[in-house]
Image 1 (cartoon, rainbow, N blue to C red):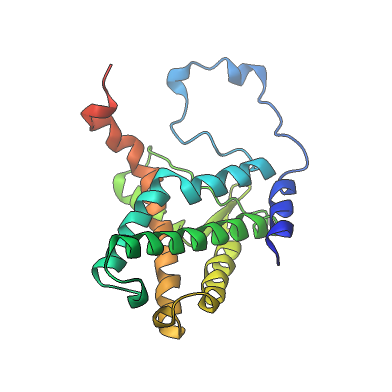
Image 2: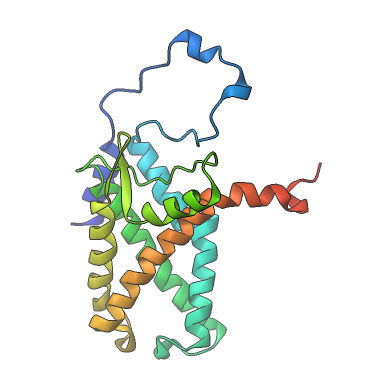
Length: 213
């Protein structure tokens, strides 16, 4: 499937009708009684899928994970064709970013088929252990109108793009073993992204440079 059909599917996917506004009496509730579950739980639209794709490709969490991944590859010189220089770091970073972008577009687009919502919804009302368990669980699951289902689009996207990427990767980064490693890293990156979404809003409250007036 080419990138243009995927993009068209991405932009046109989503609920046919806009969400029904809540009754007036619900709007009158005091803000102190509002749930701290994130407010992105409304059905995802085509534009919402595009926003998610951009955020998960060039958002803070993705870019920081990319630095760690490229740095690790540079330290251990993998793939070896890129060398251990800063230029090699940049090549590794770019290679990962292109793969992440392709995978995210595929997941957001294919998710229309099963009405999957690729977003992670945090809930700081749960105990820490359950919140952590949720980040792990939602690495492999997605939301469909309030129902948790296997993330079919994510599995296809991560596995498919990593298999296809063997055609343009350096020779030392090809083959079944390397492909399986990249698939595992793809799900590992999603777990780290979920943890960022779940815990970073709490962590930054305690960092002085985020609380300057």
